[in-house]
Structures are given as C-alpha cells and as structure tokens.
Image 1 (cartoon, helix red, strand yellow):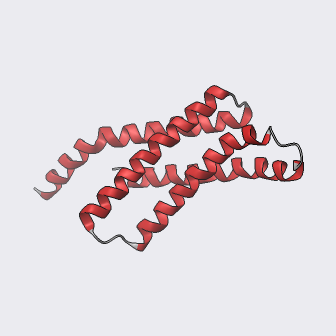
Image 2 (cartoon, rainbow, N blue to C red):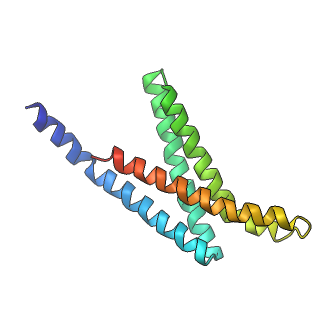
Length: 136
C-alpha cells in the first residue's frame, strides 16, 4: 500500500524531472559548444537558460522559506553554490564582450577568460549530477 502510494507520487513528478534533466542537458551542450565557437545567439541562449534556472531556483527558495520556516545549513550551501555557478557562467559569457573595450589589461583578460570556462563547465556538471541524484 505504501509503495503503491510512493510510486503514484513519483509517476506524477516523472514528467517534470524529465523536463528538468533535458533542459539542463541542452544547457550543458550549449555551454560546451559555446567554448569552441561563441556567437551572440549562443550568448543570448545561455543567458535565457540562466534566467530560467535562476527564476526557478529563487521560486524554490521562497517556497522552502515560506513553508518550512527553518532552512538547513546544507540548503544554504547548495543555494550559494548554485548562485556562484550562475554568476560564473554569466561572467564567462559576457566578460569577453566587456573586455573587448579594454586594451590596457591584457594579462588579466587572458587569466579571466581561461579560468571562467573551466569554473562554469565544472560547476554546471556538478549541478547536473545533483539534479540526476534528486530525480526519481
């Protein structure tokens, strides 16, 4: 009886989890292809995905804070890590455009533009593995 109830609940959520995994998979492929050849269309697509993910993350945080009144330490760490991931990805996408106007700090530009893709891809993969762990 209990297992039947649990299975019914998981079946109700399966479509949502499938969409979540597919969206993040598409995002990872887009981000990986962005490293090899960037364009304005890819910049806008990555930013749109980031905006969508950030919206749902903020919505999830607001619902959790409203319902449970006590937020765990690990939730705060995961939330902060996700915000840092989205910020690193956003900076990776748009800093080359901002740096194209600055010709004085070439060595800083090189370090930042090599470091941010590594951070963005690794943290995006960690988030993807977290989503896969949370799915039924």
